[in-house]
Image 1: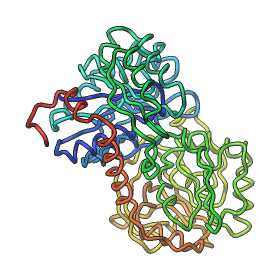
Image 2: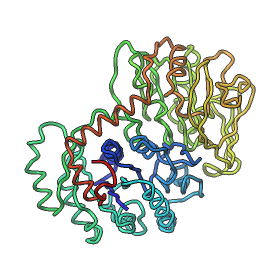
Image 3: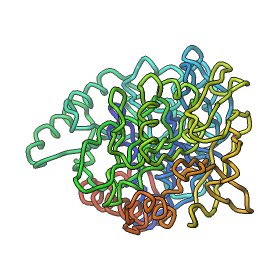
Image 4: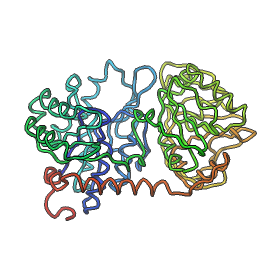
Length: 490
């Protein structure tokens, strides 16, 4: 089984983008490639071809590998909820709930299913590119680990360690990892990659050599800051509050960052519109009064996020926006928040509870145990679109008689207020459809560029692959992965 695993010195060092870029680079060389992440924790998820769900990062990596997203690519997915628990997804399906107290004990038995998924993927390709989670240096989590060295040793997959030089301390991070991890774990690591380098690489020659000398691992290259990564959907909410750019003349669209925000990559296509300034509003700040549209993204715990919205005073901001004629769009959990009530009688998202919504749509939501997971096509606002459903709620009421869209087979979706200024839908990913995005923006006086979002993502992956070909020893990585000569491309 030919495979290589990228682990990191910490979270957010760029593993997801590097795995995606490496997948695309290898595909361009003629290899059949599959991405794999044994365990992920994220509320940004995607629906798979087999009717399951995986982390959004692995769905992106599947696109990079020119493969259909499959639940085997991320066999264990943890989706954090409101009460220090996480919904457990195993091989694409809901398995139950894990709490902080039983997490360590519960994960180790999942290694068998992780290996099942890995072996199935390995059987259909030339090479598997694996992404770790967090860092192997988190030695407090090593017992029962299935995300990093626990998997690497079980599967016999060689590891390359990724360090982020942009955050500083990369020499200590890599050499320190070598120092503190178990010697048998350290033996799985065969080299390192320096990521997110800005400036003249010549200035780091001595540092690079110092890491090799002190760690005993070879370097596979120094990757510069990859600007095309900004054109990719992001899986990690840690990046949301970093957007600080602004441009005069653009129409403002705002989205509050609620604690359990999910599938916020739904809004990514708006970032590519030259006439739009998308502002993600962090806690502690008001929603900009000058926004022409407020979008409420998905939520993994709608009732808890509704309480957080009131704590922040964002419900007042949204009500003022509505009185002044502004538009509001709710997606999935955001749609539920726009209604009159949200009820969770079975304790799906936490203890059984109910709460009042924003009351801007005449609908009510009851959370149910069955999870809708499906790709859909439809027509909304007079334009065709594609997307996917991923929700537990059932929503109905007077405004649902004015659906946002008609899906395949004539099934209604969502609701629109009587004056057409408040809209809600359960469909994720629909803003990537050029026609629907144009129709939505026209309602706030913006002419869409008409750019194809999927093509833009694909082009960004090609650009990243080209950069990795230039700055990494990909031939060395292929040799490390034990790809047999002649099994793939050049």
